[in-house]
Length: 226
Image (cartoon, rainbow, N blue to C red; front, side, top):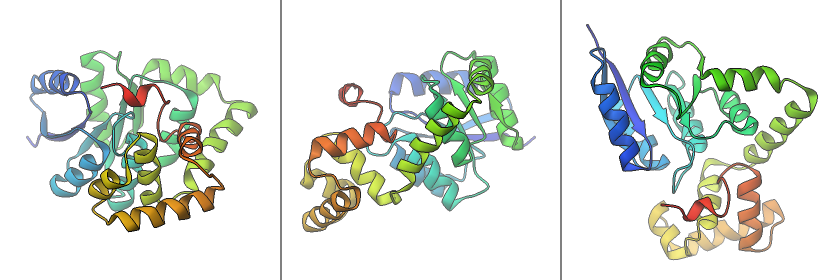
């Protein structure tokens, strides 16, 4: 019997180890890789072609939403299952719009996670009960408009621009950004200036506020949490 191959994308090592331990008990599921940030998740998906990518949202360097967008652009048939501590309407709306196959909250049971991976591998949509209830509850004009607002704000940017915004909002200096993106410092400066002009934003604080509003990062406090 062919086992379902899984890539775990989660920046907290303890959580990754826990997820691996849970899934290793399943005879039909095999964890073939782990990624500690969104960029690494994209690279490992390209290299390993897992059946299912279990993706956290709040990760450094590249958040899980943008990583999901890049993965599904490169591999439209990929199955991305979001596993997050947050069940905000805005995040759920964006996950659905991106094409992820499901959204689980981290309070879900080990048994539910395994079942969700099996359903995801089949291409079926799967949500935690709490998320399903929120989806039903927020199907109103106001929530739909808010979801569209957040999604449209983020969709104004290219993948590279999203990466740049996140790194700036995380407090990275131009030299650090150059290393992370494998480009020159001068190129970073040009991209940063062009980005600010595009968004009509004139300082780092403004870019950080934009990153929070667009869901690129969660908030200015959580960025500093390790």
